[in-house]
Image 1 (cartoon, rainbow, N blue to C red):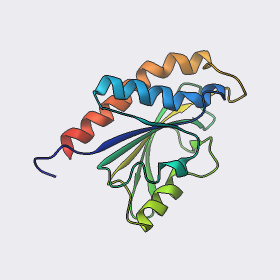
Image 2: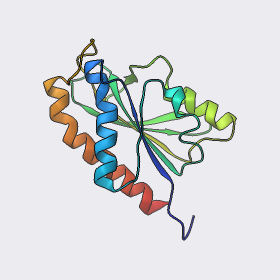
Image 3: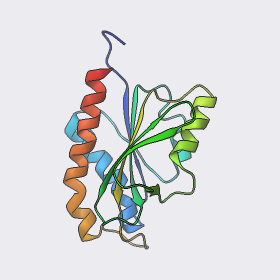
Length: 162
């Protein structure tokens, strides 16, 4: 990829109408603004919606609320690697998306149809309240600036290394 700008996509998963579930799109949008990228994908409610949006990207950063049982606001960095979408994780073990299908499954599907990003990094933020309504819980709201910084760091690393 020498001499060209790597294609980086940032996707925010979640619904602002399910309280902390809306943190993914919020963080993604703020990080894209701060990093100087032109656009963000999302908000996406279903990880399957990534198909067609992240096709052939050099780096896809996916931001989502997770539930793993650790303290609300805790950040988790997960890199989906390998031919089968295996996971290399930095953060709490067992963090999962609040969505019905996992990102690893969507990545495997994208690879099967030869449309997968070269690299997928998931930045998860532990949610507390996924009930109906808008607004983030205090712990999740307090963690947003650190999460934005984490996403910006991943974007900058992806641009420098590609």
